[in-house]
Length: 385
Image 1 (spheres, rainbow, N blue to C red):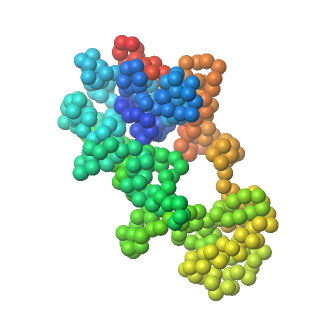
Image 2: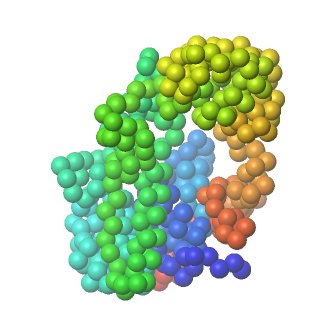
Image 3: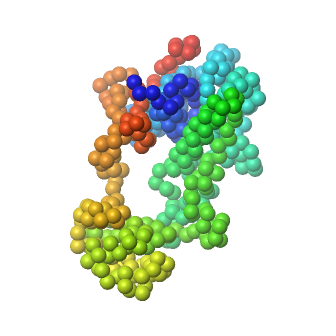
């Protein structure tokens, strides 16, 4: 069996729903043993979230199955003496403790950083919250949509007529989970040099603003406040969504050589000589006129035909797919991105989950087991069912 970077790392995971479970899913894919500590009788709220009411009723909602494959589940009540004793034993033997309670909740249960460090000086403790553990908003409740709005993300999503719009998936939860996984991995690497663990305070708001990249830095550095531009890329033209014979096509001809190749391939080699389109900034200023000329030419072929023609000549272009079409791409199956697993409990059903896009020595990272039933691993950790 392939040796993975986090083999031997033990993670105690107190998280619910998405940001925290997405973080621990990444750690699991890299080899860590992840034990979900769940409240008896109910467990992770995501067990009851998803489009299939029957799965939700089983406590195996699609949202849970997607982010918890390969993990173990233990039921513990942190307010009971027996639960606290078992939890403390788990923390003492762990490398990582991950939680996404509202700021201060774990400390009020008696497990602030001082107590956790006393239980395990080598522990890496990561708290994911909407706003971080300090600051005037630290105790405020937050979901992904709240962070999308506060970060400015919604203000630049959509067109001037439709903004603000929510991004179509919980992007701030995903960003928070990825940043937490990165921070934990860095802390584990640092611990190998220094010997001691540390406390990590992850703010989803700050991680999301950071991930907005140029959208934030254009304002901070140049004082230019970003505006919603729909399907167009503010940094270049032609760069956005265009019309073909059978549907939309994304084109990102951001470099001069790409723009010239695009014009030649669509049968408009005259466009680069037009004063409105000669230089990068001129093209941005006359974006609508340029898009009009290109759309007329692009309507001669289908989106797939243009994708193949343009990509072959080094012009970034691709169809706009549905989620179902994207998941059916040969590119994903060819790299082993999807994994089919037995359904939890071992009946005839199957469940397919995603990887994370990383191959190690040519091998994709995959979960070995399906998501756990609630309390499935109680006996393994000496917890009464």
